[in-house]
Amino acid sequence: MVGTTGHATRDILVIEDERDIAELIALHLSDLPANITLANDGPGGLQLALRRPWDAIVLDIRLPGLNGLDLCREVRAQTSHVPILMLTARSGELDRVLGLELGADDYLVKPFSVLELQARVKALLRRAGVSAARAAEAAAERPSSIEQGHLRVDRVQRRAWLAGAEIVLTPREFDLLWHFVQHPGRVFTRTELLADVWGHGHDGYDHTVNSHINRLRSKLGDEREEAAFIHTVWGVGYRFEVAA
Ligand code: CA
Image (cartoon, rainbow, N blue to C red; front, side):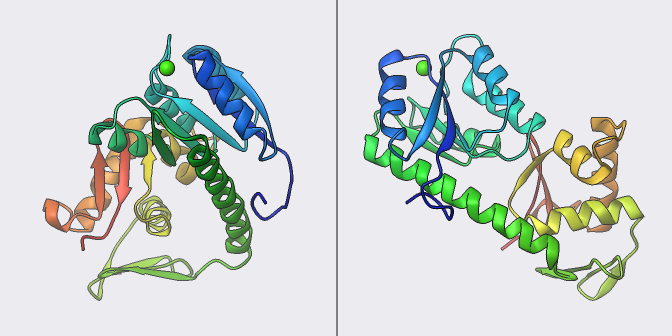
C-alpha cells in the first residue's frame, strides 16, 4: 500500500554513482511499485531532476561532478517540494544538519538495509500525498489568523500583533510574515521566498529579500538573538521559529 492513492505506480529518480548500490535500490523500490530512473553522476542527475516532476528522489551525497548537497540545494531553488531522501556514507551530525537544512526530507546512512530504505521512501511518498491533500484543503479553507508564541497574524485584517501590541507592516512585510508563520521550522532559500512571496514573474534579487527580512526582524524585536523569530540559516536562507 503506497500513500492514499493505493497502488499507483510512482516515478522515482535515483542518483547514485556506485552501480551495485544503485541497482540494489532500483530493485527494491520497483516493488513499491515504482518506475525507477537511474543517474550515475551529479550533473546528469540534476538535469534529470529538473526535467520533469518526480514522486521522490533518492540522492547520494558523494557523486562525481556535483555533490548531492549542492544538487539538493539547486533542486530546491528551482522546483517545488519533491520529497528527497539523501544517502550518506558519513554519520556525522554535520551531514545530517546540512542535508536537512538544504531541504532534504530524510536521510539514510550507508550501509542501510533495503527494508529500511523501502520504509523511508514509502513514508516520504505518503507524506507527500498527505501534504498535497492538505494543500488542497488549505486552499479551500485557509485559517484567517495564526498565533505563534506572542505573535498573532491576521490574514483577513492584514494586521499583526506582538504581545498584544500592533506591529505596523508594509504590504510586502505582511506577506512575508504570513508566509513564515504558516510554515514554522521550514527553511526557505531567498529564491523560494522571491517566488512564493513576490511571485514568479517578479524581477527581484536576493538583496530585496534580505532588506525586507531585516526590516521585518527589527519590527519583531529580533535584534536580540534569543528572542528571534526569523533565524538565518547560514549559506541557505531563513527559518521562522518561535523560541521555546
Ligand atoms: Ca557515491
